[in-house]
Length: 137
View 1 (cartoon, one colour):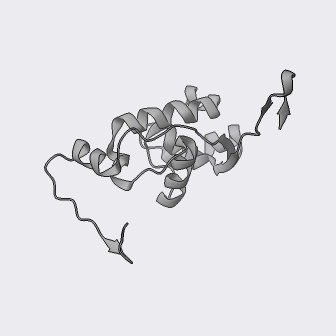
View 2 (cartoon, rainbow, N blue to C red; view 1 turned 90 degrees about the horizontal axis):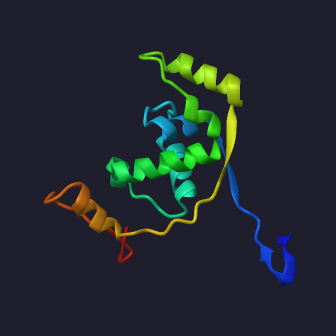
């Protein structure tokens, strides 16, 4: 805890170390990371709330993720991908930033239920809900 005057304190910020390839993917929407699970975990951590898979098709979420990763890793703001040279891009950024970067946990709240976002992202498409042990998954 950081102690301020008048007995106020600021709790320590939770951080996560992610691969530079994951950060680059979040900054550009170009898939530099082989593991979708790593991208998903980092995205949820940056936002501070769950992101359902279909929500990765939402430009607003990507814009928010991009802003958050650029705030966390300002050096990515100047990154210019080379057409078709993804491996070289990744090697170059790892040379500049190292193999990992640290991000802070976000505090954003969901603005809508995931099924509402499904209707917005894919209007009039069927939604299949799966129940496991009586609870929707």
